[in-house]
Length: 404
Ligand SMILES: C[S@@+](CC[C@H](N)C(=O)[O-])C[C@H]1O[C@@H](n2cnc3c(N)ncnc32)[C@H](O)[C@@H]1O
Image (cartoon, rainbow, N blue to C red; front, side):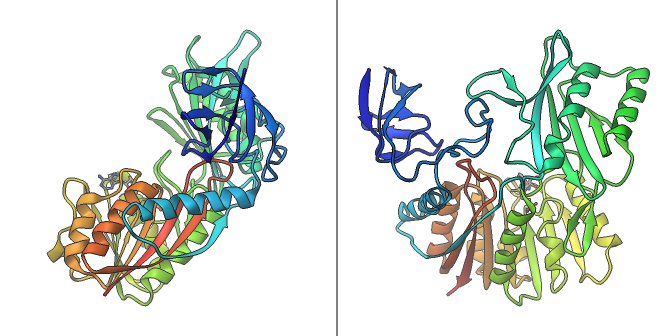
């Protein structure tokens, strides 16, 4: 047994003591005791807890691997997340004003990716246990919208219907305007009788749509509201994690682009920002996934009262919009995947657009992009950190840039 004192929280949510020794479930300032193997104390006993420690609110927290920070007070997690962004910027000698963080409430996640397996008695569905392939049932999960935990019985019967005997089924369930939007992967191919059973299950469990690998059954449109438009994203396509988080991101994006009359939305997805922005501005939406950009276009065509939206399917890593293509816009929104958008940012740097709203889910690549914009004469006006992944270590943000 050894005793160590935690100095800081790592990016995966572990407490870190000198060494470094990684201690899951420990908070900075705490003295913990346990057996250290390699660089890890897997089962620490907390000797002196800090006042930021709370009893995990969810009854599944001990076994379920879904959350990493339920043992910390909300204000601690909030400060830590803002600190992660501040530190990433400081590594490039940048600083700015930080808006108060926007935290999504419990039970607000609109999508859950459940795992399911057949068992001797039937099936087991839920999330993976911490660091294990064992599945724990989470009927009272405090993270996701109640409709999603309500879908666990459906996920179990899906496993009985079509999980391979020893395989694991991945079932992504998303709430939509007209019922559950379900995407199943990793199952065995269904024969026509099983497909009919799938349709019957979908009906009985209130699904709008169910996709079994490439077979898609639509009972009602699996629509998402995006401003005045309604969009049916392709099964499993990217969506912001919570309606509250999406609203906070959108409010910050709106403020950053201001009264720009013509906006380019880069990495536009199915239209989360492009369609609401089209209430006031003309928008050109660019996205790599053809099915998503087609969904955005259809959503715009069916909506009333929006300004003109044009769309383009394009790989923005290999083929970014160049300086001369960007110069016709008054503002850009850019929301790349975790890898950031080095090539596209280099072109935005050359184009010197008056305003840029940069949305990011990775503070490290964001800070790299921010440094490139700073060098090109953009001022980082402010950062809005948005926590739509509460109790996890994910950090999201919107940053406003103005050309000097
Ligand atoms: C973080 S999501 C943001 C989507 C959208 N802005 C939203 O809020 O719903 C990033 C998007 O980038 C797209 N993407 C990933 N790699 C890309 C690439 N190389 N070129 C263009 N788009 C890409 C993904 O399909 C995804 O829709």
